[in-house]
Length: 631
Image (tube, rainbow, N blue to C red):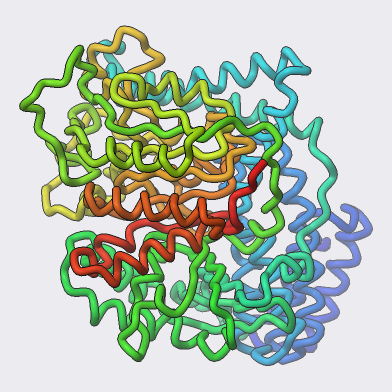
């Protein structure tokens, strides 16, 4: 009966007959609350329908109130579902709530433009939902890690999870020929097993999870420094409550930004159509990566993204920026303002998955071990390095058949040896793993080094299904079809370690020289303060709207790392060495984890050889920006 009343109310609403729709909606809601309880998903839908009705009538106060009640119920149900299920299921479930999120953003940008209650509701909703899958997965893993010594059952589950990741990585990269006749079936089988184990990990960690309170705007605001502003960028579809048909209700996807200072109300702005802004972002990244002129693109993107919010930033000199979509893959530092200055000269940037990250910046550094640096890696695992070995000037992929997982090959990186020696001077207690010692096994055995620095080749292989140009360095090579099409982006991104080029001969299935992002997620980085991937393409991955980039950074967050410095394109070997040495000197001098990088980048920008942002802007800092703890 409640459904029937609701459908009749929907019909009156689309006809614009709001007076007749309202009592029917209210009767339907009363029945649902009585029969199903006040927290049932159907009750949330009913409340959302009423919010849409009041929005169409122009009653902003009631629309905001009903929308808030619907969002609260959805939030409670999200918590219940997120306590179980695999990462895939969590993603699917979160997608079903997109409509209510878009409505709250649309409300604050359209009908309730200057209404602080609507602005706060929209930002609270985004801060509770954006990047939520990453948090849930990371929490499950960290909660279980803390239980490993006390609980043999947990230990067994965790070991199986790590083994499946290893088997998947070996299947894709090192042993396609040695596998059964049907590697695709084997891949699907292993992926299904991983899903099962993730579900078990989720359920198991739920036993030990503390009851968490929902994220409140005030708690996040309290974490924003006085000289900073949180800039939360989201994609949304504009909602039209007066539309006559379902198809007309939602507009084309657009970007919006909310700005929040340490005091005062949040402000929302619409930034424009996603399609147009994404094209500009992709073109800028391509120009940056290849050293082409960028002035016009860098200026246009600033006009679209930062110029509109500049009046809201006031005296903020530190931008805590949480991008979305393709904007997760550009360095905002390289945009240009109206005075033709790079934004790095005007602001310090710290990248976040969402403003909610600010609540997790603790200083859990109790069990850290000494810093570890991997460099001068011997990809061929030869007994002695041949004098004529070619070295590479770029930390990316050479001799690569684009997207051909089995044939990636890398050349030595000459400057990384000096880089390691220079870092050792700054951090005398650092442990160096060089040449043949820089193995996958050595990395997997690390226990929360305070700093982990990997100077090597990185790779990210675009999903064939996406049919994008090869992601490694924007070359025009057509993509050969490969038998094994790998959907999981954490299996398509990774780092090359000792023996990488000889991985097909690897007898030990656990060490083939390939450390995929999937395996990185299983590392123990619980007390790690900083991971620097001094390599190419390490910040790349598949972009999932509302949930960040699926690649190495996500894997490092799941593993427990507090701060990550990663690259967005192929970087020059010598320039990177100079940048990294300056970075560590600045860290040692007590500068913050992000400010130390910015200072080094500004020095390069003002130098003779490395002015073009191709050399200095590839590396972006994410996570906690405060100085390193001495513990």
